[in-house]
Image 1 (cartoon, one colour):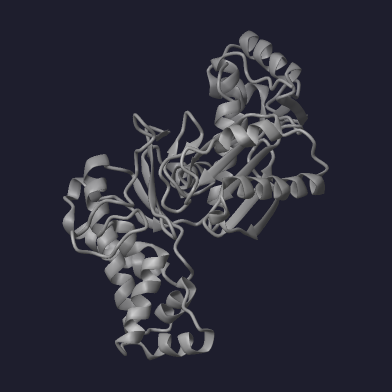
Image 2: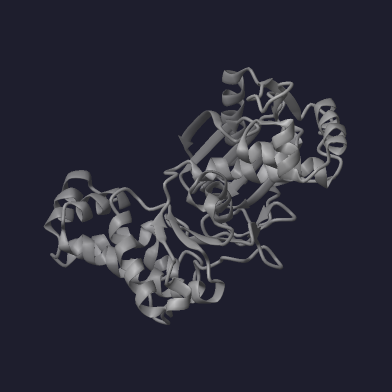
Length: 394
């Protein structure tokens, strides 16, 4: 089965305009794309023939004969998949990347890539069955790992033991019969922010992804910046000290070893052991273990020990962001992936460090904000990743 995309750059531009801004009249679309009427008619007719564009009712009258609206065809469907250390999240979107259906379930990625991919395909199959959907136009996948983008495979991923070099893209494409794109989760979430979040208003921004794995997605000049070997934004293993805690990568003192969810839980257990947190001690006695959600609840409740350990982690992250902000000069920094209850405390400390340690030229008008997409940045960004490929010029 072949999947036809646009034939040229003009058609690709038209598709992206309809994806990003919704249905438009022919006149509005031609003006936005800078195309003559004759050229627009020819390119739109070709997109309709390819099954990528369709009419969507009459447009608002501008005087004279009323034209029809154009939109991405209803048959265009993308899947966005995020595979995390503990959960698979699968969604199917329309051509404008609005989520039509979504399912999540726990997963243990330590079982290996084959078992995890098989479960992912089962979950995607359930979503497609619920929608009565046969063909997918494209699929995007986010992994909590460094990814060789051209190969569609993770590279030495601490959060995915046993996955090094596994062809995630090829395995899924062979089963699904459509284009599949794979990238690291920070890049994918940055795309989600660019399409549907705060990043939509900025051509240059940083998206910092927290959680089990830490990363940074860079959107520069309106495009995702991956670097020469897909390694841009790899802040997780920047060393903060030579004698710090051991990281999942095997080194010591990495940023992730101080700021990840696991690091916060480790410090919370230390606070209990030292008698510094009766709140966390009570929770540990009740549940038998602590989670990052427990740390968040203790922070919101005003527990001094919890607040201190969260601020300490945020301070280290802020110091890393000082370098990034001064080097990249983004229009905004967006923080995502924080557990419930941690965001405001972390944000306040990050802002304090970045604004205090950066020159006015870099931060005079720099917003540093929490993501407003909650947990949808990943699946929307993954669908955006796939659509960027399908809607690119052949």
